[in-house]
Image 1 (cartoon, one colour):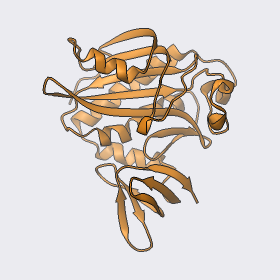
Image 2 (cartoon, one colour):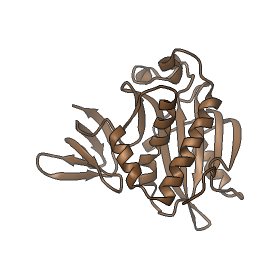
Image 3 (cartoon, rainbow, N blue to C red):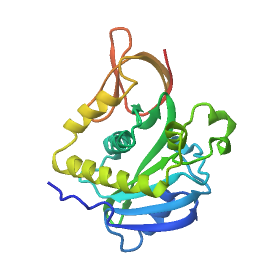
Image 4 (cartoon, rainbow, N blue to C red):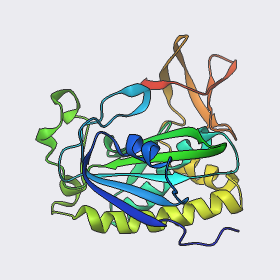
Length: 246
């Protein structure tokens, strides 16, 4: 089993970057070690899945972890990377949960977004795990269309929280998570994910490249697909956006 304390191998800090994932990709052309963390106080062009904008005002925690998992498929790692975030938030007394695939919610409001990207550099496969947490963000500085669906640690706890204290705990949790992921596989982590995913058991509408699909979310497959019961027919959704639950 992989030894712990691989993450962070080191932390590269920046005042502002376009996005920590993009900065991480630039750094891969240098001699970068697995477990390196790219951290920024602010992102000028933060983004989420499918290139959607991710607002990154001051007071948030914005970072990317550079990893080289054996399997050349970032999908399962992306799905499961919400687990250490949930563990961290629960350590602060916040009842966080997961929405498929990897949004972290508190009382139905989004507190963290995750973007995992796979890239090759010099025949080495890298998974770049970008994490953005609303720690002490002034929610009024978020775009109006997301203010009603977002939350922060400060809002939930009723007091200010320093992003650095959250970062320290989250990196410890991610290190433990990644050691299990690499050393023992994803089966136990998937069990934990299923227990925390509020999407399961609900009727959902998923926007996919082929259009909208409706069904009851009954499981998450061993490779991270959302399994739907669409009226007696089992369907696995590998890529898509959860539009709504019914």
